[in-house]
Image: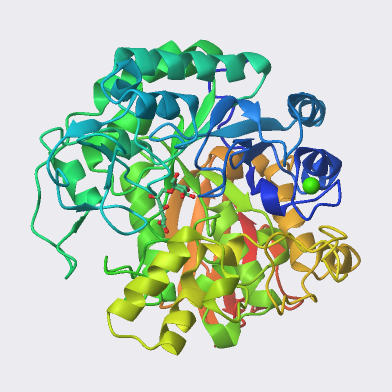
Length: 554
Ligand code: TEU
Ligand code: CA
């Protein structure tokens, strides 16, 4: 297999609990995914990332792993997994799994053994710290202290996320070896690589030094302590050499806030990962005080962010790009102004996202333009982070109604509801009540309807991914350089992909028309999200609101 086999490919993320239920229990499963592989192939998918399917108590929806070598029974069996890998492969689709090794579940055998003997060898798989009181004032990602008392002991253990997700001690060579063995076991099985969860958190400030509080609870976000942590490089270098390198695996790291230097280390020549996600657009407008303190991103913000990201990164390595994932609001609801959300604007957003340089990850349902979901009450939400976000908003003085509105916008459950296959009672996802569902799903958005509608968002996504396979222009879109165009024209997001050929992507991300003077004649129109093309004899192209046009120039 070629070294960089994954470059220029199109990826898709599945949230297994909510993709397709094959055995009538209201929970998506592996057989359900296998049944939909032809759908994914038709969509042009080449890499498939599964969010965790390992054995788990699901406190954080599978990101709390109780056994890395087992499939959770709600998803099926190891045979189902082998079948999925083989069937995907037969369709030219590589499967990557979620690698969650900053922490495991408190139900994992290692942690159970550690609890049984807080001074024994397994305690050293975790951070068990002797202390009269919490060793530091760090706040976990899901709220509250990162420290929890070890029962029947004078020690505390560290959890950067939920208390049911104890952090693993990467200082311990035995723990590291266990992780490498597990990774190699999966790679040997035939998976093509991993998306690597929360990986920057494996480094710790081992002096457990408290920092100035950033909120009234006296705590400080645990991220702040990463600045004083021991270097992460030796761990990741060893990880890669012991595992991924041997299998030529594709790896994509979940990395936030990387410095220029770290970028080199992660994805540069000799980088430890194949790629990392570009989260710069996802976090636009975040001010660090919680979901209730958030500025909505404008078209200009999005454009500046994308241009800056490519300027900074393309000379170093390959990014994986998203507009949404299982931790974010739906892209259509997040990036398009509320009044403008429709088929045209969704296609416009899709054009920008899929044709920019990098490996685009389409999140399940994005390809039909699924939007944020309505939940009536806080009790209807499942996600622990949402419940925390709600409490933080209340503490900051918002009314219950206001707090609910805020989480309605940013809750992770917006993206975690069932995939909408049909307009049936349970959306063609299941024939019984799904594990999570909005009281008022927008049933008009569904695969069955869009299959029959050539103007649909789904057909448009197929056309976009079809361009990657275009005989003449495909390779320029997959591998070509990224050059901003019309940077100074407000609310126009446009760029050229330049490889052997030149392809220009011109989008008007606003509710009013905008004229562009093209610098050369159009050779061929490769894609247009509207029926009209307003071009005069002097190569003045007037884009209608949310029009997206992809053209070839010589
Ligand atoms: O997310 C890590 C992370 O730092 C954030 O995305 C965070 O979970 C989110 O902003 C809180 O609202 C990864 C996974 O993607 C996420 O689903 C898990 O909950 C988390 O790790 C813990 O494994
Ligand atoms: Ca099921």
